[in-house]
Image (tube, rainbow over the protein chains, first blue to last red):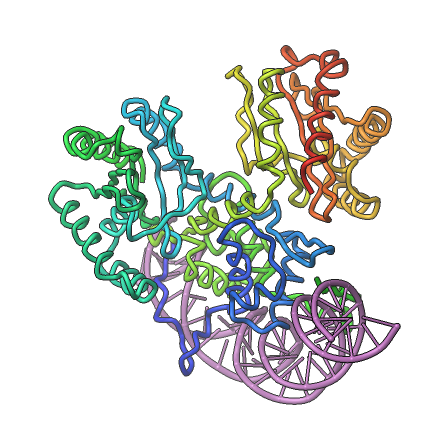
Length: 265
Length: 265
DNA sequence: ATAAAATATTCCGCTGTGCGGAAATATATT
DNA sequence: AATATATTTCCGCACAGCGGAATATTTTAT
């Protein structure tokens, strides 16, 4: 297969001639919904994206015509429409690793009684791609597609431990810029996790995401260049003690990832 | 809330001045994955979208830089990446009706032993937005986000029965253009379904989507202008006979929709 | 009722984005 | 080596898309 590595983006001045700005802006409009499922008006989009009102008006018009946004004339608010979900589904269908991983995840979920999940990165969050619940119904209701913080969760830290030095420092810089205030504490948590990963092969979050929730995670690095993922197993501290994680669960989670590495790109 | 209805698109010649072409093209690239989860190269995109190779190159570069596409340098193929799934999740979160409907759907699924689902339209397909399985595990594995044909399924026909005359004839025209050949048979199936809807309030598909699969569906028309949805209940003909549907299940499905109409926009 | 505020859309001239054909580069194949 | 295939880069030009200002509509205030 013919592959020609892309050169340094052909810049003119300091604008990237190859970057299609209008596309990026339109997608930024779709992303504006990230918070809780509210409907948004053009004014909201303008405020959240920093784009001019006329630009927003044209972008929402376009997205509406294409079916990606539904429009309520009563309130003049938009919502995301079914075609967007359809794209998300294609995304899952295009990751063969997920199908392969499922039985292993289910096995560990059954054994531990805790949910086992796999996630990938979206900017400064981790997005759940697949999740298996144990037989125990008192588990956190984390759904596929939901996103949680990168910096304070085991799964986020495992991801950070699994990526290249370059990408990592880029992301850490962004987190620092975002968090300004609490950064020192966050930074220490992350470096502890890295150390744990280097020494034991897994990362922990003991009550750091939510009090009384413990979690352990391990990165998965596909051998083809596809994005790094991370698997976790976590739940109420009363059921999933730090000790149990360290003496048993962590090893099983590492086995899970090893097994998947053996059968997946 | 200030609402100003959009005028006729301000056309110049016959191009719509308000439609952002580059955005539409970029989204078309993302949609190119619709079929089974393969990885695609720039050539594939060009073939599927009809856009020039250089345009595709710029669009994929942009989508890659934004994180929506992952790139495998070995094979020079792209896949959809986690941020796309994240959008899909926001879509579900933004439809409050789905959360409200869930318990009613589960109730009917338990009673009938058949899966109950709700879907919305994406072009000429219906996309599953939520699904409840009955206790009986021998059911079709239709996942949220999957899409099925509009014209030959009960749920698609119910949707068609629920929308405005204008939109319907537009869609039917498109189906006709697409299906050319088998259109007459399809058309008859659709009009039978409309008749059934007018007379009884539900649509059927008896072995028409897949032999040995029966299904009944009812449209749901939100009172705020958000898109029409449709609920269905379907399964193996050996378990779900036409007779049972007509004498019992259909009425319960209609009740379900009536209940939801009472508590949802 | 009337005025004022808030929100959205349209208009329109100009800029620079994005387009596509052709050339260049890299890999795979014979 | 030479040929075939696939992808990216180059670059001039057209016109798509931008944004500020004007306009239209509804909501809130007086």
